[in-house]
Image (cartoon, rainbow, N blue to C red; front, side, top):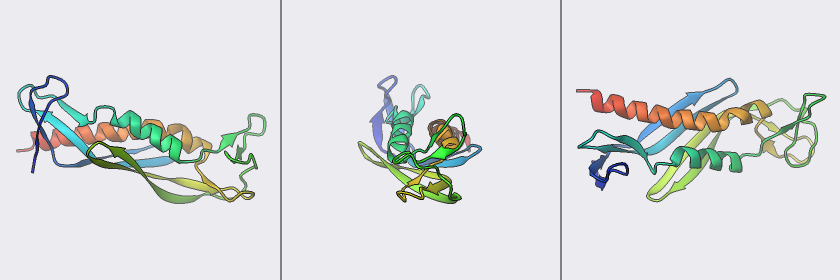
Length: 156
């Protein structure tokens, strides 16, 4: 079930491990990254994600895909990221799938957070508090996937 490839670190023969997923939770959001590809170097024991920059790319795609509310400093209230209207409606917990295209398929980032609808334009968006931690959570979820892969390799 593994495919022969080369290690991106040392260019020695490596193997692609079965697809893994990682999870991370913050105060205002949870993130699950599915369908990650992990490469294991047989000779030197290197372990990494394929492609190497998938954590950064996924964080950028999530930030670009989801509309983020803005916050006014004096009133400390969230406002629509599109029209600027104050967000007065209650948020509702939603899991938003964000696909990230890579060379050999798609990595799926599932963002579980409160989404708030703008009363003026109707646009669903991520509240400020959740938006601040999403990039960090995506990176932590990718790191969790590597930890899962290490545990899988260490198991007898």
